Length: 116
Length: 113
Image 1 (cartoon, helix red, strand yellow):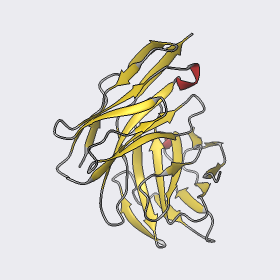
Image 2 (cartoon, helix red, strand yellow):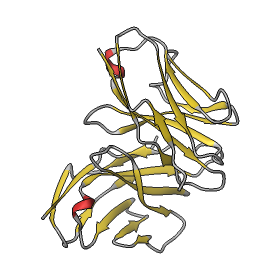
Image 3 (spheres, chains in turn blue, purple):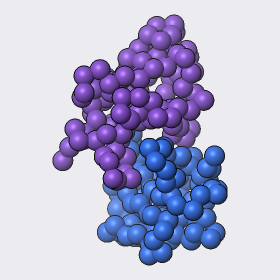
C-alpha cells in the first residue's frame, strides 16, 4: 500500500509571498502519478496540478509549481504570489499506474492561510 | 465546463436508517469513485467502478455499502444501516478513459444521529 505524508498541518503566508508545501510518499512502484488538490472552505476538491513520474520536468500551472524528486520520493508544491483565494486545505495524492486501478491515496492535508 | 454533481448536499439521518447518495458523473467518463472524509481527517478511498462492476474496494466498504449505476447517468452509494461513524463528507469522482485526473463532485455531508 502507498502512504502519503504531509508533515505540515498548517502554513500561513502573507499575500503576494511564496509558500512551499511538502509531501513525501512511499511506494515500490516505478510508474505513478502525483497530484495536488485544493479544498477551499466550500469543501469542493479542485485539482491544482499533476505530475507523471516518468517525466523529469517539474509541472507548472500559472502560480503553482512542483518540485518532484523521484529518488527522494518527494513532491512539494510551491504557491507563488499568494492570493487570498488560495486559502484552503491542500492535499497531496498518489495514484499508481495500473490497468483499471486508479484509486487515489491522499495525505492528511495542509491548511494554508493567506493573510492580507 | 462539465462538472460532477452530487445530491443531496447535506443529509441527516437516524442510526440504522438506509441512505442513498447520488452522483451524476461527467457524461463521457467511464471510471467512477466514491471517497469519504471524516471531519478533520484525510480523504479515504471507498470504491471504484468501471464497466458496470466494482473494480476495487477498500476495507471500509463492507457489506453495508453498495454502489450502482442504475440508468447510465447516475452513480449511487447506498449505506444499508447507517452507523454514527458513517458521519462524513462523501465525494464522488469520475475519470475519462486515457486520462489520469479524477474530477470530484462538491460532496454530500452525511450526519448520522
